[in-house]
Image 1: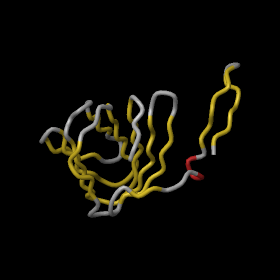
Image 2: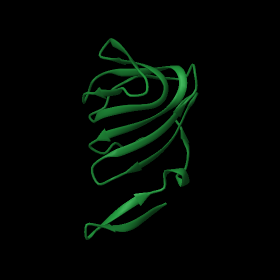
Image 3: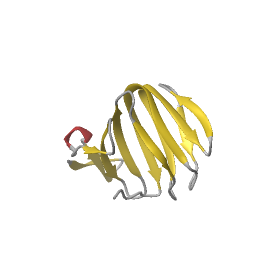
Amino acid sequence: MTKRVKIGGRAMPLVDTGKLDVIERGIGWRGRLFHSQNMTFGHWEFDKGGSVGEHSHAQEEVWQVISGRLEITIDGAKHVAEPGVAAIIPPNAKHSIKVLAPGNAIVVDHPLRHFE
């Protein structure tokens, strides 16, 4: 699913995310994951009523909502994220997510995050 192209004289990988295996991370959450040298990328789709329970991890995490609406709780404070809004979750912050309207988001973790 990865190929290399020359950009500015350097070999750079391109990832066809549509060809990656789909994983499920709970009811109503489906996504495709890949890694760069220093970051983990998730292309997630979510259904109304889906949720991600409270958790934390060492990585900083950025949620860029492409479509739909999410309620993201970070260290007890609730925020609504929708298209045009990026939620930045600090390292080790407790956070959870509730789907208010179905859609999709791109999530980036830095440094690399390995899922179980």
